[in-house]
Length: 228
Image (tube, rainbow, N blue to C red; front, side):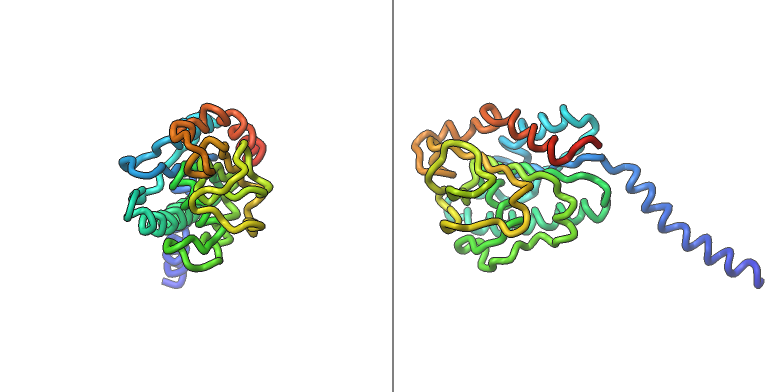
């Protein structure tokens, strides 16, 4: 009996790590989160084309869509609130399950706004009252690159801005704002023609960021993720 008790204890102690190892073996080296624009059905929306470029560069890359309402009109503000929470919850859950995976974010339009708020904080109108970013710091460390396209939170002068926009979006951050932690991991694409991330009048241009900037964004992702 003196021998069997420690052996049973050892057997039980090994069971949990074995399960962890099996879970990690199913983890991809690169995992991408995509968030769609307003009013589209659940899925990736216009972020999908960018995600496919990343998957082409890193075979075996997995992805998941942020599950949130993507509501428009009167439902927009509450949709952003739900979306911020969904970003934090889904990224945190994956990071816990797969701590060695490199995580990449791709947000389009409202999908960019919820990622912007999740990583850079608020306030954001009635959608978010606090200033602190809700993404836990230990989870955020796993995120290598954040691609924002047509972000309504766009404001001129940010170091990670790309494109011709010189005016802010309809939910623009205040002048002089800086993202506290993640600036070096963000690229935000917005052109002057866009009525959502800037003050243009060409709604069709809002849908063209992957076509225009996709390869440039991919190069940034590859720089940040490196060889895996």
